[in-house]
Image 1 (cartoon, rainbow, N blue to C red):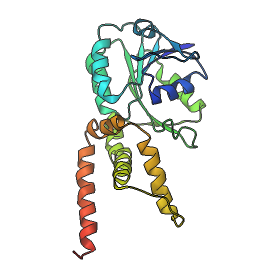
Image 2: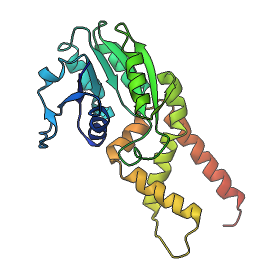
Image 3: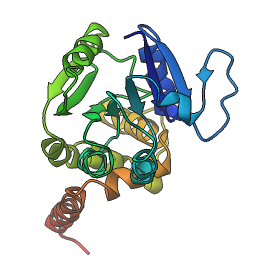
Image 4: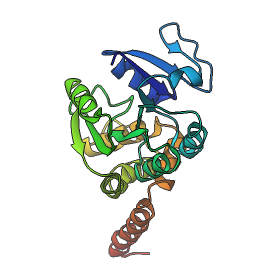
Length: 238
């Protein structure tokens, strides 16, 4: 295997390209024109010719893309999604893709702003692996110093609601409240400021999708509201 494909070339698709180009020739398709001479931009028809196709589109566009691909893709292909939530894309791939198409669900737990930090982790689930490509890709990512966590999409979303979902929610709330750096900032406050910068550097679209498409996020939000009220009420006063 020396050629792979990426559908979607936003912030994450760009980073994914940087990760894959170290070992492969990479074909890229995006609905927007790609005006970069070092990117091999191809048509949707051509991007579907490679054996392994990475899907890096916004979560809200995933179902529509799978419906579109259902009549266009065939053969011994493997689709690998990199969505930040997992139950929704897994369900859409199983529902719309032909049964001959293999499916690997992944979530790289890093992004353009954190990929260079040490300790990068990627979640992977072997959903359908008729052509035995799962172990190949697991080994490739491990060769890039990425630790692989093998869990199901359902397990991922349950945990992510209280980690990723919570992190992005708190970052947005603090940003809305407003932060200002001072000469007497504590280490803890500096960490909060870093959290705001990191989470708010992602698009509002991604924030909404993380909250809306994870079936376990609403329970987290309700619990967080209850805990906030409980702590504030414990302070007494007016």
